[in-house]
Length: 382
Image (cartoon, rainbow, N blue to C red; front, side, top):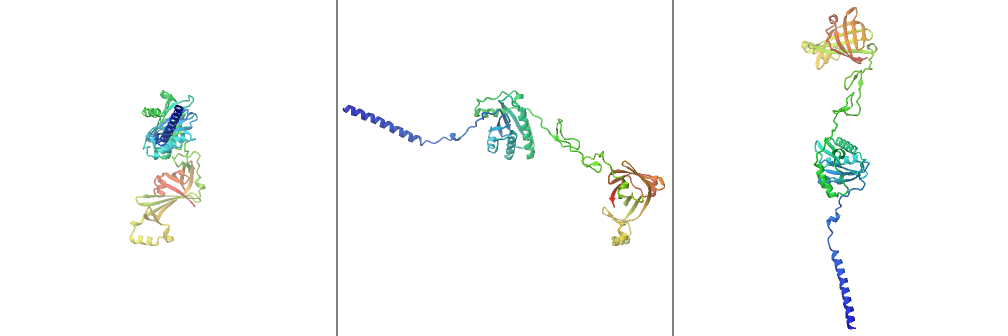
């Protein structure tokens, strides 16, 4: 009986020791520190991506795209990219929007220098139906658009997996090996792609690149009074108002050997042309100068006292010739003196309100003062 009791006590003691041991072990584990690595989430590739675009500025990102070029995920490949990734918005965004975000953020952080180089490279293609050339074109267009808005100059290179015979990556790669291989990818020589550099559009040509590509439309002529205000081309459909239908007079001024000349042409009523002559006030006697200046605002003096280009003139002489005819032929106007068929002045109509002396016969010069070729007469309405 004593043996049985002793055996029972021994068994009870064993269970008691085991129970105490388990309790102590549990208490000891609860006091262990939690590893910081449990708070770090490794990048995980999206399951349904169709292609991967590597973007290098120097911040380097991998963009995981679906078959419609929507960005499913953005992977920061290097340290510069890590510093930017929180500012890159990509959820529910198209590729071009994300590219603009990357270029803008990189510029804000000072990674985009003058004449910076941006590389686009297709590094993986899971869906053979994907048009990688379109992806690269869209990325290039978006980068150029962002650069234009930021008023910076960039050079863009792009490389297509379809034309570079690169082997496609597999899904078995983990995030670490993918990052290491991306460093090698960025060092591969890329094939330069022509980036258009357009000249400004003209009246007849759109923006044009040296390669022959064009952008937009020609500006078109801005015709005014028979000429384009931009390039000077004559308006083929322009017709001027005949001189006889313009109610006013034409006047031209020129200086010859220090003397002031004013040519006046009247084409309404009594046809005539006259030349008023003004002598410099400074060449007259001082008493006359003082008298003219003292009375210059009075009616008898006002029309004869002229200040032109800062010089005072006294216009008290001149000559006048009545005209027999004024003949217009296109832009050429011929004035013939009354009773003097050989006395002619020929003018050119340069626009609606300007005539230019083209020639003047000696006979007419004898009747008037010498009117130099090139003298311009401008119309003033009554």
